[in-house]
Amino acid sequence: MADELNREEVSDRLVTIFSASLEGSELEKAIASVDKRLDKFEGKWAGLIKWAEQKYGLPEESGGEDEVEETQEVNEVESQPEVHEEPVEVINESAELTREDASARLEAIFRSNLEGQELEKMVTSIDKRLDKFEGKWPKLILWAEEKYGPASVAPVQEENEHEEIAKSPGIEQTLEFIISGNSEAALSNLKKLVSNSPSDPDVWNAFSSYFSSTGKPGRANACEEMAQSLS
Image (cartoon, rainbow, N blue to C red; front, side, top):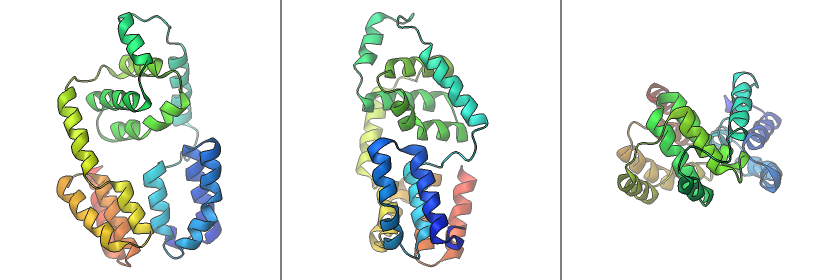
């Protein structure tokens, strides 16, 4: 679809994606880079848009249900009392959390209580939520625990899993290889990714981007269908 877009439409799409996920100087920098990216990846705009969507998330097409949900969430988090029924030391510990720790806590809560598309949606929204509630992460975590339930406790196992993931090639790195034209490195990463996570739809979406960039639309469509079947 992105192959049929003209330069102006691709530019608008990128600006929409960046604006939905970034703020301040980071947003200004990303928007300022749009023309340069379009020049660099001339003829590979489909891969460029897919990379942007994978890295920054899909922009919200409408403000309907999601906007209502977001407004309710803000109100719920803001209304969390300073003193909670949880022990005081737990709240103090949360107040000292780093952004990385808060992100891990939220992801653990979501993965312990949600499934499917709802889980995927909540996990991909973590960074945006942390930005929105900067300085109020303890309340955000308490809100998540009250709304979805506490996280299952398996800290040692989770840490090991995160270490293994960190050592594996990432989707984002692979997509950057694809849009920069480094097909050999991208394919090498993709083979490792599909070997480690054959049921991960993101891996098959990345494969779809790879085949699109190498001029194989049939294989790209097949991989995209596989990703949809796994979502």
